[in-house]
Image 1: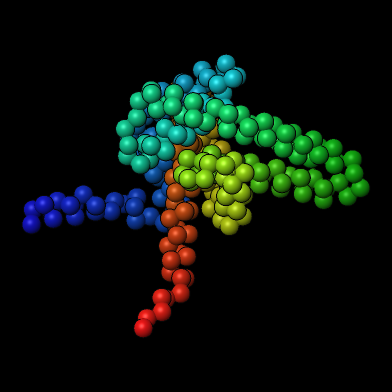
Image 2: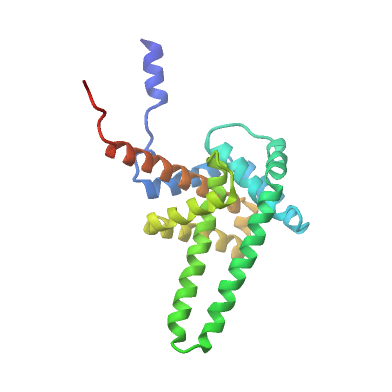
Length: 229
């Protein structure tokens, strides 16, 4: 009886667990940072140092998502896991990076160049929305690489694209929080040394996992009942 009571206490939902999906994901990400701030600081330092080398920049970004994905699952990690993430996603991260350079470059060029077109404001709106959608897609793409068994970049880009379109308000709020965290880190500098940028990776992992769980429950409820004899 004591064991059963202890198990119920261990799985007792917290205040954060009872929140609606959107605030729950944000609070969980902040909780990840609060509970492992020393790890977040180390990850941010490693991320900055790796980007200084340029070659290790994109792989280190994927490695941060790899490690924070483990943290959000309650798993332990060490510097070895960061190195594993760099090794596992070295070429994939560079393919992702080069693709983004091309796409973001083209969309940005057309965004400014279209100002000289007839009805330029229409084209600027189209290219501007396209750029925002693409960047939102990238926020989900790397976490999908960590979550899904299918590690093909195209598949995870598609998943990110669909997630952005299926939950636009959810995405907008999550991205606004991520942009706020990144902006404060750059402007105030101090949050940068507190490891806030690594919290964005935790936020992405949490957001994707929550979307997958929500859609899984939704589709399960809509599934037709099995035929009974």
